Length: 259
Image (cartoon, rainbow, N blue to C red; front, side):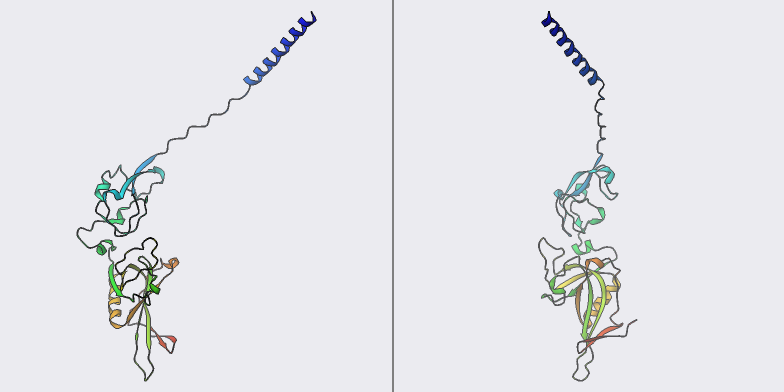
C-alpha cells in the first residue's frame, strides 16, 4: 500500500510540474517580428565602363548601364528610362575631361568633333589655345614637373637697355592662374608618369590673354611657374607687358611703373 501511495504522489508531483511549465510557457510574450524593409528603388544610369582619358574617343564598349539608387541620383545623370539609346548616341564622341570607371556620365563632358581637331573639341566656349615655347630641360617649366591640367603663372623676362657695362634684366608676371592644356603632344597625365617633357606648352586663355601672350613672345622669353592646388580656383589676373615690370639689377629686384 505504501508503495502505491508513493507512486500516486509521484504522479501528482509530475503533473503539477508539467502544469506549471505549460502555464509559464503560455504567458511568455512572442518575440516581435522585424518590419519588412521596403525594396530599394534603383534607376539604370549611364556610367563609364572603364577609365576614359581626356581626349579619348568613346567606343560602343566604353559605356554601360548600372543600377543606381534613385534617391541619390544627381540631376545631370543620363538614365536608360529617358535616353534608352545613349550608348549608341554617344559612341564616337570625345571626352572633354578624364573619367574613371564607374563614374556617372555628364553630357557636358562629351562633345562631337564633327571632323574638327581634338583640341578645338575640348576647348570651352570663348576660350583659345595658345602654344608657348618652353625649354625641354625644364628650366622654364618648373623643372619639367608641370603636367596637363595644372595651373601656372606666366612670367616674361627680357634684356633692358644696357647702361655701360651693366646688363639689366627685366621680369614681369603677365598672366596668372592659367590652365595648361598640353605639354608637347601630351594632353593628360598617364599612370605613373610624373614628368612630361616637350618643346612647347599649350595654354587655355581668353582672346585678351592670347594677345598678351603673342606680344610677350615677340619681346622676350616666357617661363611657366607652377601654382599650388590650394589656390587653383583663384580668379585669373592679367597684366599687359607694357605696364609695370620688375627690374633685376645685380641680383636685386625692384618694381617700376605699373598701374
